[in-house]
Image (cartoon, rainbow, N blue to C red):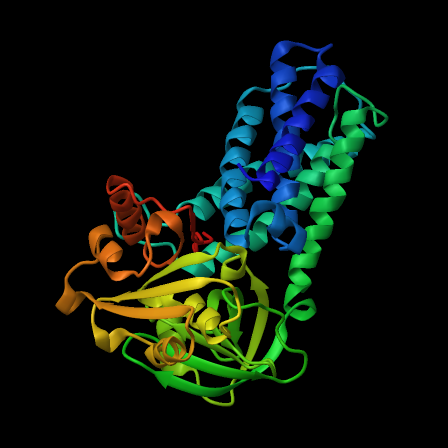
Length: 419
């Protein structure tokens, strides 16, 4: 567990503990139900706060990818907790501000419950079970925007609904604080496109066999990012206005950036077909902690397919004085799909601390741990393994290295899937 997950879990559980002295004079069922609702409410507020992507939270979790994975776990927990609160009906004589507000709060809570169940299920389920039907990204994103609206209804519900404790109770104050945090966070996320994005102009679009290569220059303030990080990318062109995360494949001192986007889905195919020189981009970032400078003195970089993008950015900035010995292995299904080979080869020729190998699976066969060990110029057991690519390749390589007794000192990778 990361420090961030420990802190977030503690804040959620605290709400449950605070509910006990506030409602335990009622009955066991009511206590259990209101413990569940209190924890669910705090979890909802934290989910809204995480969606603002604050830098210190990313540090606590060890990267935005891990923030979003915990965010998903919160969604599952909220769904379970609100179901408990709904089916274990509280039974008590309580206090309410006015009977009219109490009835309105009860209605708001009921509608919010139904809305949350539907939207959380839609949000958590990527593919319809037993089918190949995948819920489109833009529907998934829309559900998240509506969840913020539902949180406002739940905040109204918890503020004015009849309850077995008065407004001076510690639980009431605790929940009110998180109501303010959640609502403020939701409003902030709606302003993100104007507050934290940078305006860029497309300078070049190259439709390579393996990816669409996009180069862009800033039209004002430049993106603040380091090699290996990713940013949220959207273009002001029909079908491309939704923000999608892509790793930055190259950066220049003047703020110019490059992206390499593989056409795998509707959005990336539309980007390949529709993006043109002169189009305006809105970029936000950088995010992530995938940066070799955090690693040890010996490193193996392993890229699979389009996972080469962070290594392109990092290799392009190497100067040879990093105090790190790096061996890069780039695995592709076919050499024609490889991008950025010139960057790696040029750096390998110039720098003593960087070496490079291309693994073409069409001629060299499937890459496994034994081939990796025979390819690299260092013992994996004495090095860090930095990986970006398909998870099955990572799992196979790590399993093979473990069987060979060559497990790396540390393994760094990002869970680059946010839904």
